[in-house]
Length: 91
Image (cartoon, rainbow, N blue to C red):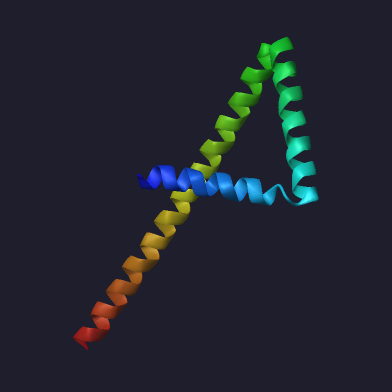
């Protein structure tokens, strides 16, 4: 059995086990109902679906920009530390 199948089986068992908790079941039920409601609204107003999708894409884009900026900052810190370490070894 491939690792993907084992992971899917494990995730399924975990999801089913979590549904033994009443609060989790209630939350899953409410989440499902909200999804159905949103899909019905999108069916009535397709432009709302496009607008919400555009908003989500813009949000992901902002998050990605922030993430790239943070990675660049971390890289700069590593480079600075590497240079300091090399200078200390020379002295």
